[in-house]
View (cartoon, rainbow, N blue to C red):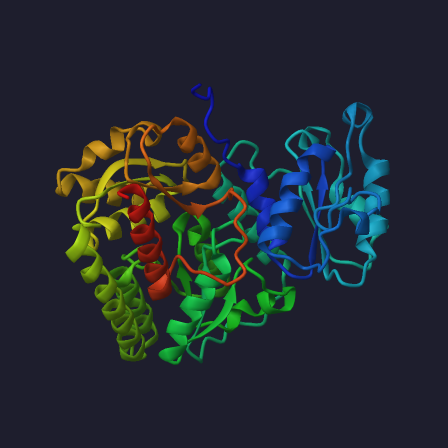
Length: 434
């Protein structure tokens, strides 16, 4: 039976929570019904674990409901009528006093935003000794990235950073979140490549930094935008308020060998450093990948000519599509883009496909295309498994996940990311054509 609805994508409310949950010593208090907390707490704890135990009996404390993250005020019908001040007072006193938290943030659910409680006044009254940020409205039905940037901007506005120094070749990487697939491995890979050129990553905003590390973002000489939907407005704000230049590489996300080489070259050029050590490393990875590709192709003729479909956010979809087509010779059967803030990336992808006569992929449905390789989130791949009559290779490139436990850090970006995708595609095509 065909499902009536496709996967439900998180909105600006989730974007704000995951932005703040990506900071090590910040607690996010969710002012809303109990049901709003479980997904956000589970994903935050899975993507960025801070506690050793997963046993819900270890977290019996009120407001936590057996989970270690995102305590909630568990609003009910009476609270929406008479206000939630009493519950907010209690949760602020109980959670805000914990010594491991350097900052308390309160995020309204969309429904709680309609009540009109003065969150900031309550915080000043009941936890005057603890810094607190209150986000009254995350953007309601806005896209995930909009809520992410809005929350990060409020956080940066609250900090009191030192003056912009920018002497050493330090950069901030802006545009990743803990909700991105393999975010930790992608950061490590970009740090590795940049370090070969003598460039240090100062902060990876909302991806595991402490509050103090984030406060020192002004030490960087350059802000590098990875995904404009997640970082462009933030970098523009830092430029206007702290005189920090930013770079939006024309190559897009550094996914695949060519895009990574161009990305490294542009960053190093902006900093005035030599990119050659990183380029040599990428070339050695390319040579290793070519060995496997050549042997595989000599026996099967693949992956050239195999079809693929992508359903994800524009920056990732563009990077994956262009690389699979230009490097592996694969053919896009369907490209579905999730809603976004900026349309420049989607336009770039459409122009690329039109140049090669492949723009019909924009008008094909992910679920109906019958492609050999499907790249999307786990839920969508699970639905496709129910619908597709022929075998296919499914590759998770975004969340939600089907639950595979990643013990070893993996990357989607950089040379390591290219190697991982090649490995998954080659092994997947063996299954499809076996």
